[in-house]
Length: 415
Image 1 (cartoon, one colour):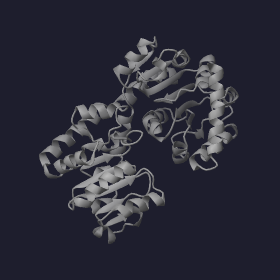
Image 2: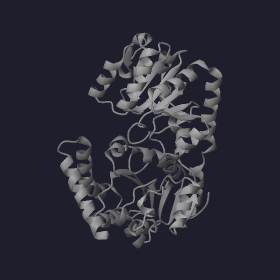
Image 3: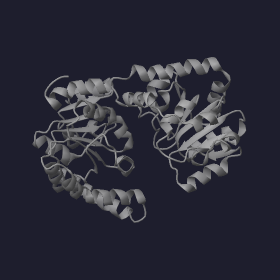
Image 4: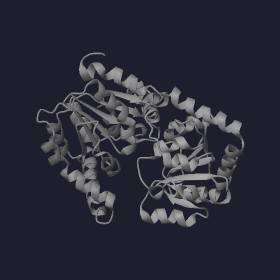
């Protein structure tokens, strides 16, 4: 199986390189990965001694960020390396100043792994949520480098738990300790004799609370909202936008702020062509023209988590595609959250639905029913909003647990 795995990695790398001829994201991944080892050799301290933290993409980085910043705050002289696999993480956070260096992760070839670890000389390796690279994990184990995964979540459908999945199960045995989000994940791991497991929760709750405490003031957005009931749509895709804009076009009292997942010009124009009420792009907004707009289109990145604070209800995109985006960024402000049907992989979504502060829809009529309810029933809106805010607060604390548990290993003493 190991031979097939290595062949598969080489094939995947070749496919990424080929796709780069017509896909910008694939091209960035191929070019970034090919230069990574030389850049690491040039920029890292020759003595190594880095805590290596790996996040697959931007969402996993945000999940691991509270732990990174806790380590940096308590041990400012400790060297930290952050790696990404996806360009959507690396390109956004390549200048992140909370670590010493940010890099693409070289593809999981044995030669790459050996050179990478020889350069980095990590004292510990911490993976965020998922990404299981066999050669990296086995070489970390061979070198006796403590290796952890945090905020992990496991499902019965994964290869680890299938008949004939011994190759994948062996990767789990490379971890020194596994910190999972819930008891169900712990029980699944126990069923395959992986017992070095702690239920610590999800560090994303800590991250969104940090964002809430340090949220940006956006005066132009505040002026747009004024005293209007406002729906905030975050990370939307076309199927989300079709039903949201249909509702907005026919409900004149509803204000709308929409932050699409993709903000290239063609997509922005597509949204604008569907709107029948006055709209404005955030980048073009000023104190004068904002007064005429009834829909504000967010055409930049990095502001959505602060914009949620100005709305009464949030709709999170992705639920009619591969899966919903981050609902906690909205819920932390105490607001009902609505999303499409693809949510079952997300524990927080299932729990919020159970507590009646999040709602999944399959159709326009269901969306209309929820939005009409929250627009006309102040008591229902208040009750649901309070539930959402309490849900986030009550699930915080994973960073404290993980940091305190690792501290002896990481730095040799407790604070």
